[in-house]
Amino acid sequence: MLSVLRVRQLAIIDELEVVFGPGLNVLTGETGAGKSILVDALQLVLGGRGRPEMVRTGAPQAEVEALFDVGDDPVAIERLRGAGIETEGGELIVRRVVSAQGRTRAYVNGTMATQAQLAELAAGMADISSQHEHHTLVDPATHLGYLDAFGRLEGLRGEVGEAYRALEAADRALAEAQARVKGRGEREDVLRFQIKEIDDLSPRPGELVALAEERERLRYAEKLVTSAGAAEDAIYARDGAICEELSSLAARLSEAADIDARLAPMLAGIEAARAQLEEAARDLGQYARDVTMDPERLAEADERLHRLTRLAKKYAGNAGEGAEDAILAHRDHLATELAELDSAEERIAELEAARARALAKAGDLAKALSKKRHDAASKLGGAISSELASLGMGGAKVSIHVARLDGGKGELSIEGSRLSAGGIDRAEFLISPNKGEEARPLRKVASGGELSRAMLAIKRVLAGLGPAGLYVFDEVDTGVGGAVAEVIGRKLKEVARHHQVLCVTHLAPIAVYADRHFLVRKDVVGERTRSAILAMDEGERLEEVARMLGGLNITKKTRDAAAELLRGARA
Image (cartoon, rainbow, N blue to C red; front, top):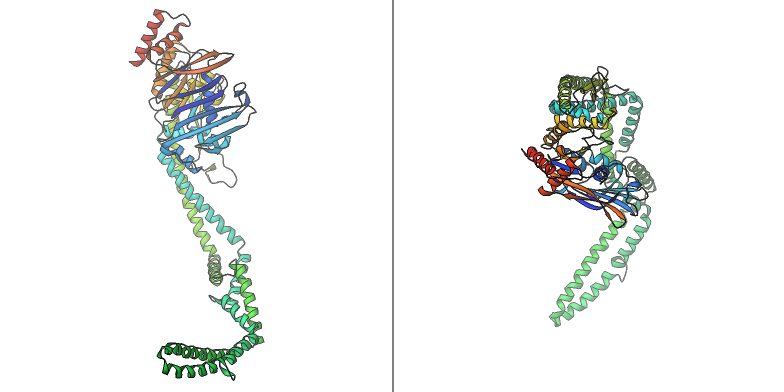
């Protein structure tokens, strides 16, 4: 539902804000006052093309902002969420800016969007019928959805969609398996080579680090032996070593400690240090004796480390910590794939059977849905034709053409018809405006007035279906009057019980059915013409209906007639 429309510097509109409500919202006023400009503004926020001539003369840019309530439209909310746009409390704010140079910008809840993105996001939120623009219902892509809604076929269509997606998954799995079998020989050779390459080395967890440490010890063995031996010699082995000096020092301190007991703790510390140094010297001597200077082992470690590093980079992506585990995990993956290739023929037979079952199920459901669609099409066409008769188009007839989708190469098909998530059908509304004329697509009907009434008839039949979006009728009354105008007013009122309706009209018998009545007027302020809009109270509304009936010369009789029309509409 459209809650607020704010327009700035668009055509003859300086600045205005309109607060709409549920039900039937009617715009009236003198010709040229700017009623249809509001429809143009709405088309902009729905993704219509912006043109530089739309911008008010002298203004740098035109701006249109609309607040929609999409809380009762889960499809719209899901579409917006899919685009990363959240709707707090179901509110959606769309802003469109058109510069005097023709450049446009669009914002959806503050997020910038292209014109194409805006049109996609706003799809279905409003349906506009006017002398020049006809959206949604003249698009054959929407007709199948309306037919399914009329026939209460959404549940079966959902089952077809699920079966189609299952068929797609089965088809992909089969195609992938067949592709693997096609290149199986070459792939098996690659897998076996890679498995053998890993098995020949048989890496062990932590081996890269251990090998690197061993290689360093082997490379610098002589330096390590020399350093450890020199340290042992200095600490313990040579004459005058550190431990020997500490023993002499301890002996002298021991004599002194006999005299002054306070030296005892220091003496104990020196003796403990000597004991630790002696132990370190023994360890250093053992270390020096254990170090191996082995050029052959160094070459072996160097070679294995090189091969392991290369293998890690090839199969693990790096030679860092945990690379050996990654190599072994990759080896398991290769072995699994090889086993699957060994049983590929049996697997393909299983997948072919699964695809056949999925195709049969999807086909049965799609054919059942197609039959129900043909049955519903006849009823829907008859219902719309009856509505047209009450709208002064007694000779007009609407038919719903349901046909199979054309199959294409590589596409899933049922009995030569292309299968989609929506079934195997396409549908289009056709209309013959006059008896004896050939039925033609709605979008090709010549008369704008006839098309607008056809739109009203279709919407009247489908009024209770789908989300409570916005229907816009711009001059649906073209070429009618009297009793037909009153019928149009009643039909609009009936549609407005299920959908918000915005109607631009020149006829009083239509305007009196409004839930909210707005007057659009044109004033000259200084040297500029400005369009304004006024939400009328009951007294103002009576005067406007009287003007619509009697023109400039409003008499007591026209006021009485206006009051009678309003009472009749309320009744």
